[in-house]
Length: 155
Image (tube, rainbow, N blue to C red; front, side, top):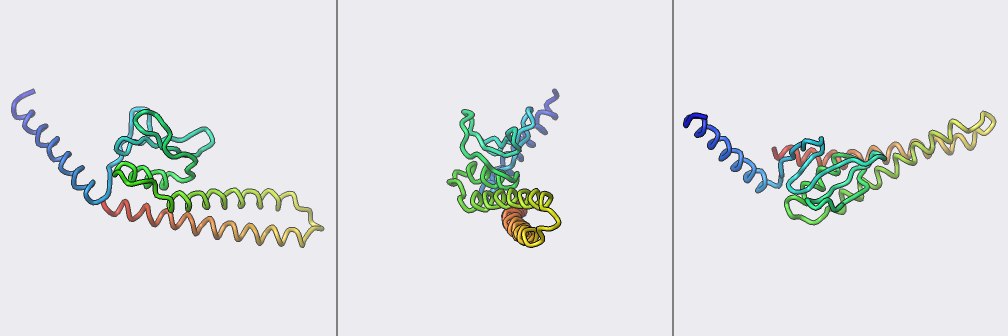
């Protein structure tokens, strides 16, 4: 490598460090994709289990937060952890409610399929519960996406 190339590399490394410091002061830790395909935010890694739920581990592979439904929730929690801020209970609560209403929606859909034609009263009640579950699921999803959008706007 020539001296000219070494100077360019040093400048790029310096610029990268300055940018990362600047983003950290604004409240954002840039994520990095690892060689295994996982997302690393600071010293925390976001991974997905066999059931489709996300979890966050630290450098020692200890699970810090588990049972996260949406990747956006996992990204926000990992960002806060990387900044040294305690786990945000509001994000995790919204995520839990979102997961509960996804389950309720699937459950109501299955019940509607099993409901017979002569059980119109039962079908109407299940349909009402289904609409309620969808509305609440959408509400909590929008809350999570709203927070995630604020995080992304920092960049």
